[in-house]
Length: 436
Image (cartoon, rainbow, N blue to C red; front, side, top):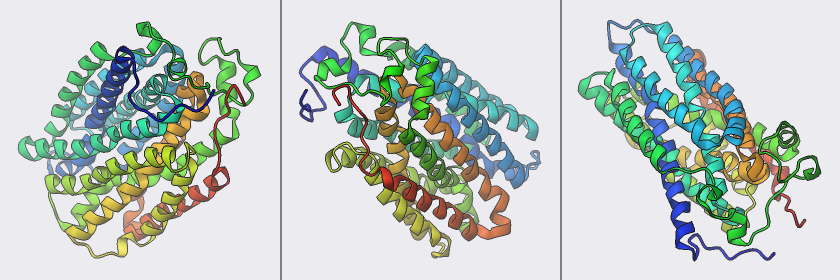
């Protein structure tokens, strides 16, 4: 088969309606997960000032660590479950649990309970990414996947940005507890929309697979004879096979080293700004939201560039942006502490970090995992990244006082540069196809 022409909207209105309906509802769903993920990072400011809550920065770091550890463990399971049970069942349970855990945190005053509930929040949050990425991969084919998943991945950039401002607004207006309550209620509304409008595959609504619709060769695993193509999705043989692929392992390692920079800003960005400028919850949350605002542009450009400039090769754009990101973070804390400089720095970091974050855990995971193993690979890639996120989420709280913020940013920068070096040998990597 010849490579199909690049065209995001095809000629079959019924098929296109379902493609973009699933795109929209899954975008909104992952956006919604961020409403309950970002609450604690903003609420920290109000909790620290509340005399009825005795909680230290170190305890906050351990609470973050509970979330990130549970999130990492959950990723490895959720990806496989997304392949075996389907996106719908996994996400419905996880989203509902996320709303309940957030509401319970807002009602609590005990440090240990915060840790337990935020750990539960991590497990619920882990049900989102891998099953939803698989869902999008079922409706969009390889030649358009970088562009589409790049566009789709703006959900977590927009979600993180809106969630910071949203939680900060309600926290300043009604008290820090409402930084938990209102996002939880909003997520329940999105949960209902997901139940009504999402479907797992084109075949579930009587349509042919996306490769048939686009006349495109289906990607296969290199050692494809070990798994029957018509066998059940995510058989244990398939799980073993996708995780033995060297490119998948390289992506996992690089994502582990990429994630700390993003989560350091995600979890400690508002607090860093507050320490540098003396701002309150709302302004600190708003300034830190520039990181996610820039991330929208980063996520969008990542997929388009990988599809159109590098012919659906995913690694070149990751190597370039990770190198620039690492070098900048080595000097981050030495810049003047003003609103303009900090805002501009968060914008630049957002532009750079969201490119490899989007590519490695989106198009690259689906490409090399193939349709059958996409959930498993996305889950393991995001699981590896989530272990790295534990470092990003806890290092600032545990070591900023000892090393200074300069030491924290130097470590994060070195990790990003190392990730670029690891990916460099895979510059030209593409998934195998049935015709290859």
